[in-house]
Length: 287
Ligand code: ATP
Ligand code: MG
Image (tube, rainbow, N blue to C red):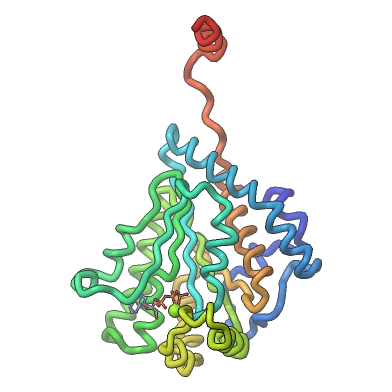
């Protein structure tokens, strides 16, 4: 990790938040702030201070991808229970990047057309172009989360999907896309409070969806489906990160740092001019 991105942290969050062997979701405290000891006020400040860095990285990635096809894109996959703050991550973290450099796709209930195809069909179509940051607001993981909990596909088919996902992500990796998989983890109580707030405020009523309460009643089933996702699809090359989400400021700072870390690993360099700079300067002066 670059020093700049690391120094606000007391520990390496790419390790702290990473899902590795033996990971148990229920051991994660959603109200914790692993690796960060400075509190909310400073956390918000640190987020703002690093926004420019993310913007520059994406600029560099785009520029670099014009001359080097092996470095193509970063794909942020966001999965979470309702109200966990996916929207806030997109607005406050990804929002600091040039909009032209970002491709955001929200995956809703599949259409009839989409259901006629393999579950990865609509995902493939939404992949970021070279030089872009792709953001999946929900993703192919819905096909082993809600689909599993709601029994929307046969168990055999769901079983098949974990391996299909691993193969798919490995292929992306080989094609030069770094996939950053993040679960925003809020507590059951925090979700109630956030849903209640939507009911309390007229300007938030549009955000409330009665079906969210139905999904909420299946909370333990969702947690168990997430655990299986981690057991089956968190690999060395494409690990999951579980980010405690009860503190929105923390989740945003953590996801920003994870993104910066992906970019630092790519370390895209500005392309070197393939023309004679002095010659062009002279030509320009003569005009
Ligand atoms: P917000 O509520 O913040 O606008 P959201 O992501 O919850 O964002 P909604 O339109 O409320 O958006 O919900 C999308 C719904 O689509 C979710 O309930 C999700 O589980 C469902 N969904 C997404 N992908 C699939 C899928 N492959 N199969 C079935 N349902 C899916
Ligand atoms: Mg919703």
